[in-house]
Image (cartoon, rainbow, N blue to C red):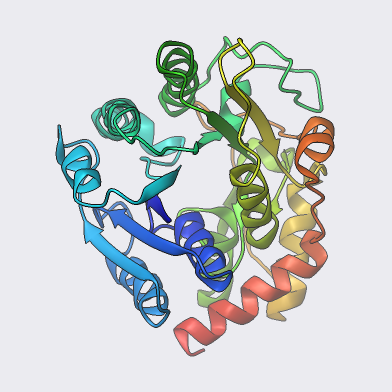
Length: 325
C-alpha cells in the first residue's frame, strides 16, 4: 500500500518521506512549492528523494478545492496519510494572515474531506505545533493543559486544525493523530528558523537579533528524533472503541534550552563569535517552550536521543556542505 505525504518538499516532510522510502514504503508526495522561503532548497530536497525508488511527486496546492481529492481518486491504494503541509512561522502570520487561513484552515479541510473518501484509510497523522500552548505559564507543556490562549494567528490555526480533526474522527470515524512539534532543527532545515538565521549571519559577519534580550528557552528537537516520532505514531493508529479514534501527542526533546547556550554552541561549531543585538520580545512570541513527552514515550516508545550539543554541529556541517563554504 501507499502513503500520501503533504508538504513533501518541506523540512519535516522530505525527511519523513526519506525515512519511509528507506524502509521500503511507496510514497506519494505533494507540495505547492510556494516561495515563503527558497524554492531552490525545496527542489534540492525533492531531487534527493527522486533518487529513491517508490517515490512520486505532484505539485499541488492542498487549499485548492477538490484538487487533493481528485489526486487521491487516481491512487486508490493509499491507506495512510501524513499531513505536514502548512503555512509555518509565528512572525510571518503578522504580515500575511490570509496565507494561514488558506493553507492551515482551508487546506486542512481539503485533507480531511479527501481522507474520509479513502475506503482503506488506516490512519491520518497531521502536524500541529507547540505554539498552541500560547500563554500557558506552567512548564513543561502537557497535552492535558488547556490551549485556549493563542499568542499568534499561526497558533490559532493549529488549534483549529486539532478541533477540526477531532470532529472528523467523531463524525466519520477517521483514525487520526495530531502531533505537536517543538522547534525542529537539523540538516535541510528551514531558513526562517534560528539555527539557519544565526549561522548565516555569524558566517557573514552580521549581527544576530536575540529577542526578549536573550531570556528565551526553547525545546529544540532534532529532525531525526521528530521523524522517529512521526513514524512511531503512524504505525500505531488509535482504535475505534466507541470514543472518537483521535489522539494528540507532544514531539519534543524534553529539554528547555537557554537560547544563549544555543548560540554559544553554534559559535563553537562555526569557530566564530556572534555579534549580538539584544531586542525586546516580538509580538506573538513566547519566552519558553518545554515538552512533557511522558505520554508519547508510554504510547509510542518515543525517546529523543539528540541533544543540541550533537545536533547543532551536525547542522553546521550540513550547512557548510550545502553552501560549499
